[in-house]
Length: 442
Image 1: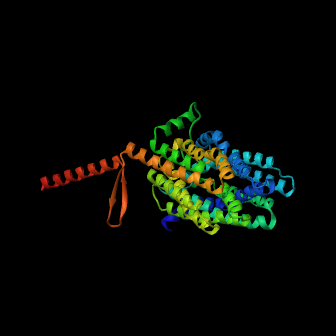
Image 2: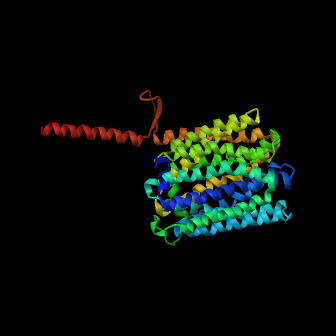
Image 3: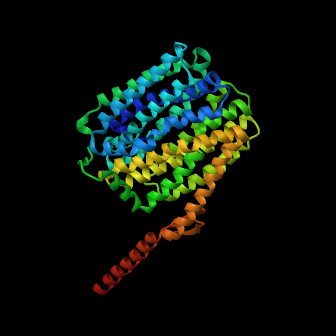
């Protein structure tokens, strides 16, 4: 098996991967159906209402994710995931029943989106930690990247299927399908051989454990930079559900199938980014910053696309850079964090990635209504370029990063930290000393 798919050679991870793939398809179908329900059935194309729903879905992460991370450090993440996945399935079934019964109102969607956010807040840190128990440490980076590939393969299929399903049978059945899809992840976890799991050290109950996780991150300037870049881009740039819906309906005059296609085309780039990331052994901060900058440039071009077809094509590099940034951030933090605090540190990663959305999506929704769909994208792209530039300048000065240009064997830039240069110089000194010793002995 190639290095890209190395983790699929492990039985437990293979079961998890395909079970999660089915559930992820259902999740993406629900996201499209939920936005379409609010945008076209419960309101008169209100981008603000869609932004509020998105915010309610993510706002619990702000308050609950740190606690959820502590639970993931303290308890078996597999058992936590069985409960959270079951809850997510029940919530999808309730929304489906309301829509099919003709009783759905906007406030119902608000309440269920908030409940969905609560369940997701507890699900996400456990999911991050559980990956490290499915594979040995040397394959963790590959497993994290394949998880992203699964999620984005689902994004490639889910929106298109959702658009066709909405047109054929309506939004209600899409929610029912998603509810059924969670049986696959629960079944996968029940089928696993627990004796083959890589059990991580569990944290003991004690005072100040949440503060301990914060202190750990505060001492790690590399993690702080990653989280800062991720926060800005997630808050203002990763609002694809909202911005694509507004662009599809208001700018290009498309219906549900046209909106769903945009999500699928975006996923082409995201899937490519995930598969490329699966080949990297240990991504670094520089990749996160560079990807954020690339995302800013690509999304600027997307916002300026004059036609629907060019807009759809422009989503491919946007998906590529956004997924590369997210996956590199995830893997870099997981691989460099001590196992005893990994749940709490990854909860901060999840908090930044998902918790930034409640702050940014209403702003982006307001921009869409006030200035139009193109500006709702530009506000995120310009912010991404700015934060990437600031992070690069700060990191270069703080860590003494040196940029050099190499012509052979292929032209490329080389970024080296002060520690790397010092290690190379020390290696040269040690090699010279060893050579001198050999000559003296001779």
